[in-house]
Length: 129
Image (cartoon, rainbow, N blue to C red; front, side, top):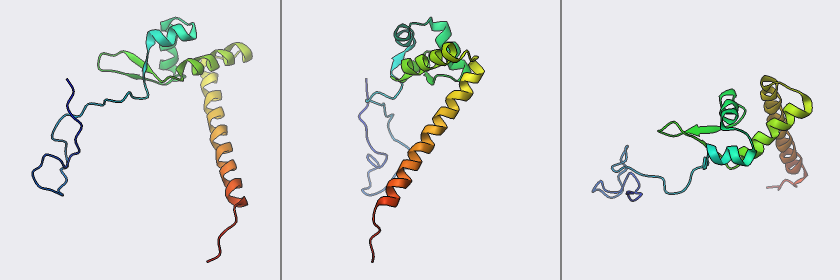
């Protein structure tokens, strides 16, 4: 059973007041970012579940544990695992080095996005007031 989603201010009896805590338990009805189970990720990536859980333990793939201890992954997890495998086979890196390379690649991507934004902002004319 799912409770209806209500704001904390509803149900207090006084209009316009805000409660500091929810009065009913609110269940998330929309799916979260972690939607794929371990079996789905393992089958899509073509790897055994033990190796996928090792990637999670090493921090190479992002996952979330539920109350039962099961791992849930983002939809982009199979492509992240493929990236790890390409770095391992293509460059012959160990898993610790792959973690460093992935961090550096993510940082380069963020810096390139920031550079594009600043270049775009510099090209826009400034309004004179």
